Image (cartoon, rainbow, N blue to C red; front, side, top):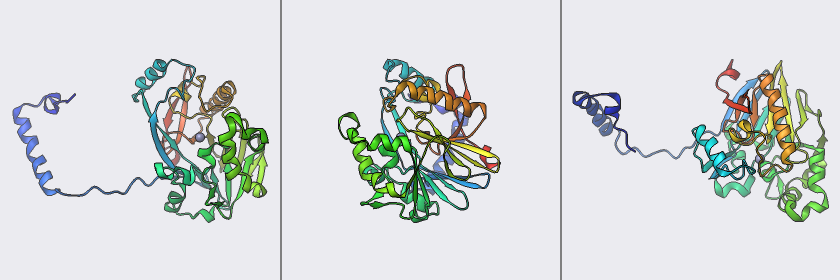
Length: 324
Ligand SMILES: [Zn+2]
């Protein structure tokens, strides 16, 4: 449907003539300007106390959905209706992948590694290049934290058979590592993911310290058990000079469906009921304490807040709260 702007603005013929003239002049002055092929910077930086925090977009993947990946136990129309109510398309959505980099002043800590080389033909796997654009080299990273062992989080750990972050030590969840490296995972429904773990995570085991709930990554940064999405999925709290941020990883993966309807099943949650319980516990805390959080699949730059509603939570992107 075309909207006639002059009618919409209530302008008559005289108004139209006045409006038309500058448009013609603008076109003549700016003819034949080729569009730039320079994309968005793909990183976003702010301070949290004395820590510098950077979220880096590994890439965006448009596709069909969000149903049935999100709201798997719901009729398609229920998910479609929720999308329309939030001014979103009801049959297409974009999934983003956003690792986080924290410079504490003594350590440069990367949370998750994107899809790596395997994602590049689809415009994903841009973490390494955007890390450099943000002012750091891969060899500057001193710690890589793995929130859980799905391919979109561990795909960038190795590059051509060698560690992509040559000088890093690693921090991973004990339960997560034990689950994915158990020999029986290499067959059945876990086969695909277990093979990625074997190729991308196992070679790093000697440089890895394994944490459990409450374990420290570095001063100010602690693991928090957030099991359900995977058996050993971890969230993290980041605290500096009295400011606190939560890295929620994959506890909620669609900013509308997962947060407004936290009980709805998500195909990628290994234990649907446990994932829902974790989601509500974690986001209740984030809402009550009014904390900023970074969600790996939240809309880039992936930093926001939540307001508790009667059912679920409303996602509020960070605007200037962290600039003050
Ligand atoms: Zn993920």
